[in-house]
Image (cartoon, helix red, strand yellow):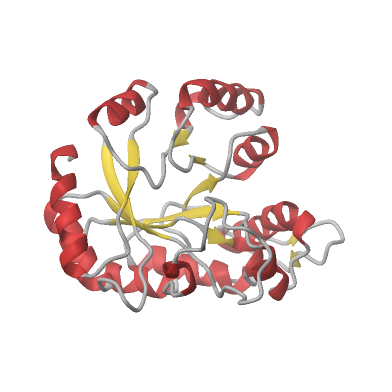
Length: 278
């Protein structure tokens, strides 16, 4: 099982360069970074985990800039977002960012896709909350059109989400798109999105997989997808030997462990604590 990590990198934490080097030197498989463009001070949306919103949510680094630094000082470390709020981006510009990072890193990028929880943040980006999932799907369609080998148009069906057949380079290294994983809670809507445009699922915490994974596999097969191609990557996990063994029994090949948003000393200590899981 590949052991990757995630962390809220901020202006107060370990730097992307120092962390990436430490991860690769110790043999960790990857680094995934979250995204929040901003957190409106006047916010009515509750923090999903309850209580006050942790400080690091308001100070996150741009994941693509930070991952670019990480790519420049490593050779093998996988790089990903966990997650990108696709609905908050111009899809043409985002397609260029993603393809450039994937190209420069030698195909090491994974696009983690999410729909968000902060209504005020999304509203400032002009996102109508109830349509954010459909908007995300259409923007993925635009990006896939731009990543296609030949100029390809995309028409989202009247929602204003479209792109002309265009020349757009670089292309993702693996062809067509980088690996795409969708995050979120299990359910029919989420599973339909995964099967429509992604390579798999990033379940936060990884709880309940013995119940939900068979449901996803059934929907995946019904959609005509290759049963052997589905990837499930438990995300933001606090590890125990029993938990990782359970994931392995479910066919999981990669797990993403949660690091604290601390300084270099604190983060490196946790990496050493996680070393037995490698």
